Amino acid sequence: MVACVGGSVLLQYPSVLLHPEPWRLAYQNQFDLERFEWNEVKKVKSIVPMIHVSWNMARTVKISDPTAYKMIEYNYLRHCLLQSMKRIQILRDQLVAEGKMISYQSRVKDEPAYYCNECDVEVFNLLFVTSENGSKKMYVVHCEDCARERNPNFSNIVVLEQYRVEDLMNIYDSFSLDFLRQTVEYLFPRGVIQMG
Image 1 (cartoon, rainbow, N blue to C red):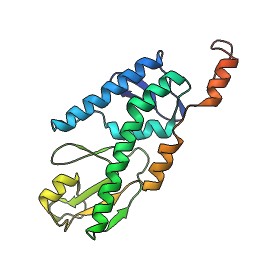
Image 2 (image 1 turned 30 degrees about the horizontal axis):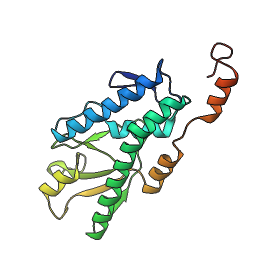
Image 3 (image 1 turned 30 degrees about the vertical axis):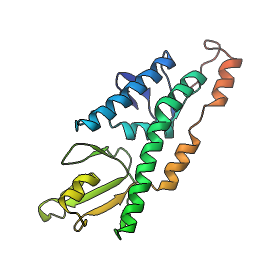
Image 4 (image 1 turned 90 degrees about the horizontal axis):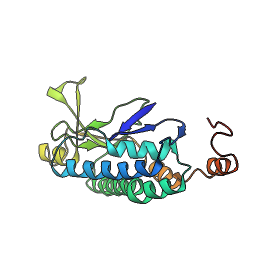
């Protein structure tokens, strides 16, 4: 599957990061993150769900270029992953302390990213769900702020968790440079053999 992130093309599923000039990808990702944060501050819906893209990159993309890896790791990806994980853990602890039950419902394949129905901010992992007009078939996702605004004690709001914190920590810890591919490319320069 191919994803376009702010003009950069990424192969998203089982693959290696393919980009003609990896350092440009790193700068593009940094720009994308800054734009995403600006959109959040200005309450503008981000076209690209950057938190989801970041977690998908960490989970599925293998990077063999050490320079690009360092730039992506330190400038963009690690920051985004760490901030989202920290926010999830703080929010989760707060909900548990308030006595709110959190139901686990893992994501299914090709499930889209969620945005708050009220303010259009990206909602990742902890979804605050209400049924629209009391209907059992029509569910609406909200961010924490909008859910609290609608109902401060969260009655009639179901909190769904899509990823366990331990799973996110494992993804974060396992994001690393693809040393095997880097070694093979060093021993057999491009053009000598085809990697696939």
